Length: 150
Image (cartoon, rainbow, N blue to C red):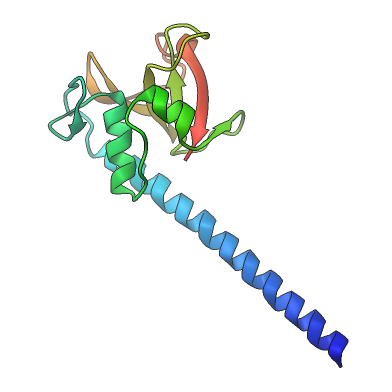
């Protein structure tokens, strides 16, 4: 009788852990989707150095603002995000992941964009404001230095 009770208890605890992990994944899917939605709603907003609002964004300001509206707090600059937020992704990039760019592979990141799926990313460009472009963009692609998942 005691063995049956212990087995039943272990199964219940295991299932509880499984459902708790499913909740974590659902929450992550929610804030990634929400951050993408917020960023997309700002397409066309002009670039503003240091900008962190729909009146004007710089690259990290757009990302910080979008994730804040989804309930996640990020660091302010691209380099601070790269070194202090999330964890590195080396394959299987997913929508909501942050892509970082630098002038050279050896320098710290100076630009950040958000992957939105289908080989596209959204960012605040100094020349075009908030826009969607290809991850294979001829300007940004050679400057890519890594991806982080929040």
